[in-house]
Image (cartoon, rainbow, N blue to C red; front, side):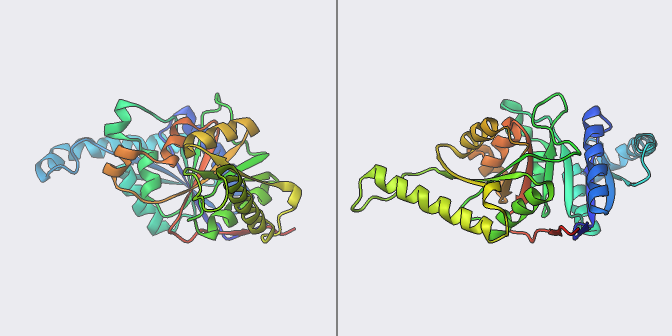
Length: 301
C-alpha cells in the first residue's frame, strides 16, 4: 500500500485509554507504512501567567518533565516504531506547534468527554484542539464503550455533509471507506424548512431531499465507489441529535465531520454539532478541518 500520509501523532496521558489509542496508532502506522509520534505535554499551573510565576515553577516543571520522559520510555517499551515527544507547555498550543513543525497528517486523541457546567468554563483539550488544528483528528473511545475502532477495520462510516463543505470532505470520507471496504453513509441535515413558492410544503420538502440525496450520490460515484457501498440520507432536526440517532441506528464505527474555527465565546453560547458529537457520539469521530488541505492516500495492490 502506498500512502501520502507520512506522519501520525498519538496523544497520551499514560492511562489505559492512552494505551488503546497507541495500539490503534501502531496498527495505522503499519497499514500506511509511516512514522508514529507519541506526544505528552507537561503543563505546570502558572507557567504563562507572568515571569515571576514561571521562575517560581521552573524547578518543579523540570522535575515533572524528567518524570514524564521516564514514564514515556516505559510506556513505549513494547514498540520500536514510536518516536517519543515530551514537551513543556499548554497541551493545545504545543500540539498546534508540533503539528506544524513535524507536518503531522493525522492526530489520534483518546477522549472520555465532559459535559454540562464544567465544560462551559473549561472545555476539553480535544474540543479546543479540533478548533485550532489544521489536520484531521481521530477521537477514540474507551474499549468499554460501543463503537470502538479495531485494528481489523470498519464496517460503517457515516459522513455528516454540509452543503457549504468543500468536496474534500466527501473525498476524504470515501477514501476511509474504500481503505477498509466499509459502507459509506453520506448524511445531510435540513435544519430549516424549504422556501415554498408554487408547491405545498410536503412536496417541496420531498423534492429538496431527493435533489440533495441525488447530488451526494453523484459525488460519491464520481469517486469510483460502488453504488451498493453508498447510502445517502437527508434528515431533519437538530444536526447533532439527528446524526447521533442515525449513527446509533446503523451501528456506525466512525463519524466523519467537518470543523470550522469559531471563537470560544461563540462556541460557549451556541455550541456546535462537532462538540455535541464529541460528548455524545456512540462511536469514534474523525474531524476534518474545512479550510485546510487534507492529506490523501492511494490504495494499490
